[in-house]
Image 1: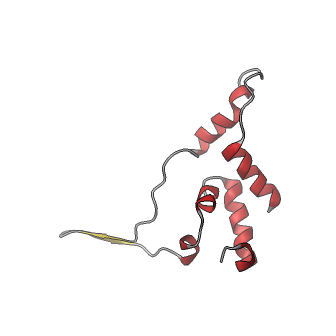
Image 2: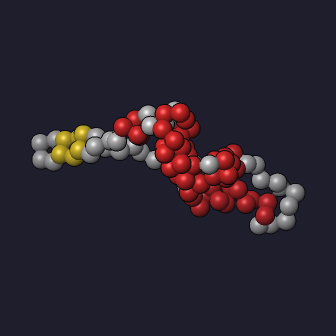
Image 3: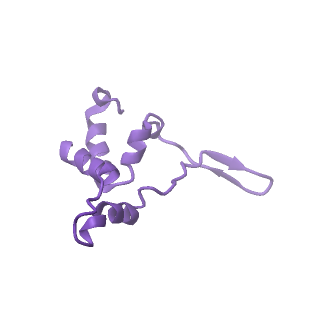
Length: 96
């Protein structure tokens, strides 16, 4: 769990070193662009309709209890793995 959360935090927050030779001077910026970390992601549709169409999807309780930080964790493979382990631990970690 610790290494996965650490990897997720590195991808989300690490600063590039401009003194390094290219392409290493933009490693984290490039990785964030590749994983689309800074792109807006809309939530799950729960209910929408008009005269001719309708849409509804069940939002699992797990997603309703996530903090903004946890939602950011969903954007990287390391964050997903961390949340998977944390969810298995139950409410001790604040995630159920």
